[in-house]
Image (tube, rainbow, N blue to C red; front, side):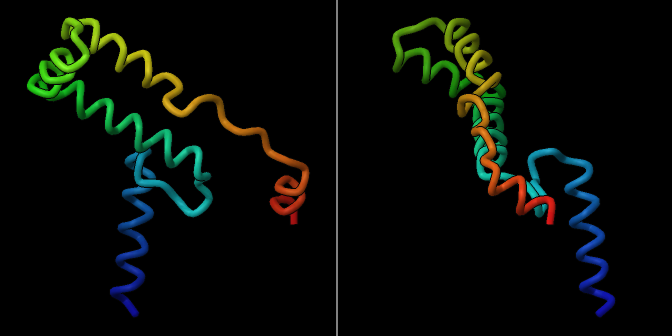
Length: 92
């Protein structure tokens, strides 16, 4: 039983420390946004991938970097509007 409590406290610590690890109440849209931003930041951090994408898209590395940074703002579009049913479920 102590191991389960230790694992739970470690998980809660990771979720509080790192935004992308998620939590019990995360929505599908938030999860996809985290995944896309993590992917774009990984691309931006690897110079070889930036060169590859630039060659594939026939763009300069700077333009590819700018496009990826722009996509990180709203990678999956605006969040969906919540319906009244979901709001009622949350209240109860």
